[in-house]
Length: 192
Image (cartoon, rainbow, N blue to C red; front, top):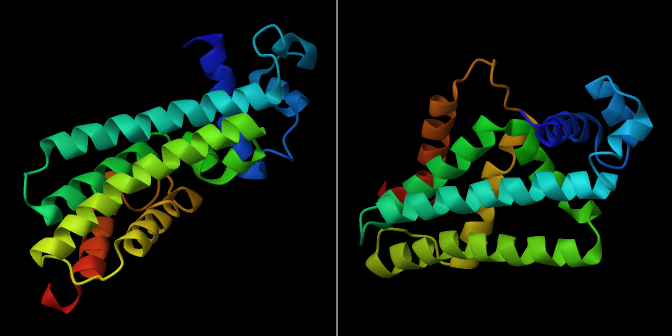
């Protein structure tokens, strides 16, 4: 593992546990067992570390959604939303620290980077909304507001980093199964 990636991993866990604002460069250096000033040989600022974590996590969510939508059966919105939910949960459970930082700490970025995250987040959410719109049009989903439904789905999924532990009672696959069931019940309503 590169030194830069080790810095990001340690920072992810510290930002997840204490928040970006409450974590100092000294805390990150201590987690790496190096002196604070030597951290600057690898990074220019704490915000740059935050940006690297968020940018990498966003890329993983986007790539997973690309693969999920490419693999989903055409014309089957339930299969498409299932694929998107499973992909989203997989990204979270494979790197819960980075996912937690992505979900909670992006607001700490400077204006330009925050705007970039908002643009990417909106595009990502649009994928979910489009599947919901298709499901409404085909009669597969009973929900009436696709934008609100997509927001509800993602808000539900984005709560996972707050409680999920890789060594906890539920393995990642069971977490995905539960959330697929929950989301489909929400979207399909009484018809399920």
